[in-house]
Length: 427
Image 1 (cartoon, rainbow, N blue to C red):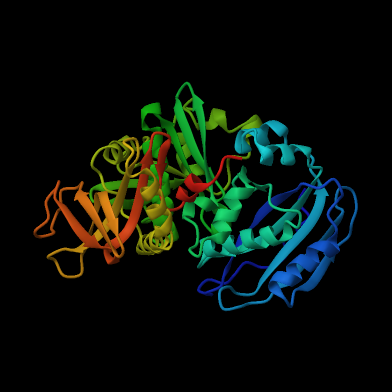
Image 2 (cartoon, rainbow, N blue to C red):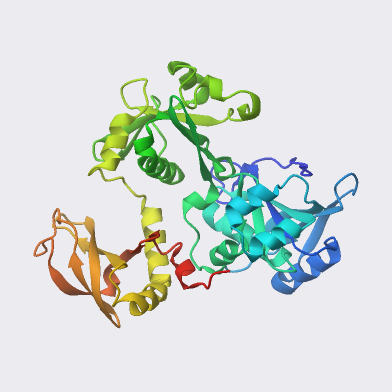
């Protein structure tokens, strides 16, 4: 259900706290048998935020147990914000959907047994969508009086586990942009169709890649993430749709209505795939094309899969650096645990000034040793313009250079965003 009135006007252009016209809607799984009470939620919010005001209430009826809009006062870390909160039966949140996202552990068992949901709806800041979304997740955490089990993200159409929400809330750095959206993959006879859900709440259109050969699936994900990073940074496409993502790496973004007719109807993501149950995959979307031809951007995908380097916005570079520093203790703890093993490898990215004034180069090192304030590593890259460094060189470097890190295990690669899970006990 959608109890929101959605009557407030969108933020004005240029307003530093302009809000997206699209609401961000999350559903908290309530694990107790008894229905959630408005008063117990209010008391939890009051204990955390203080000065909470109920500025509007909804009439109960049908599946709506209660609904109220609470205004949270501003503090040094966040602006004032309004959250519409309501309670309803669990309804169509299926067991199979929950199990696919949560596995078969305690969180799934609690979510499967649940009978109630609490919806939390807000409009995100267009200037700081990631931090604004983190504020919403922290609000949800406080609403979860019996404890966090799982949250359904109605914009991205995904389930997030309670542990994932706790990690996102606990971090003192806003989450990566991909937390705002999900990339869905549909396979067909004409290749793969990758498309996003959730970007509208950040003030951006959703994105589609149609007819992608299966061998480029990982590269297509990386390309979509890079496009979002550029758009969030304010790098709008040219009137022709052209957008530069790296040196010699370009593509075009065209509105769905203009681009869909350029492809055969039976291609994955073509018009045949946007009817029936998939009819809602229209609206404000951009299709990604080759920079010169009305085709899937295969040249760009080949570059991404090879030596092509995707630009990263200054904001994302600084966010990643801050997160790497903030969670350096996790890296050090895991290195100490596994340094004698042979199946894990530990990498750090360090920044160096190039000879051209004002330019920096970020280089990866395999970590050989750690000491307070410095790291011993083997250079994995060939520097482009950093004097006195060569690939394979081993040296001690100060941690002031740190901009990113990565832990590679037999089960996958873990960056600062997700590495804390490696320290958690299995549920």
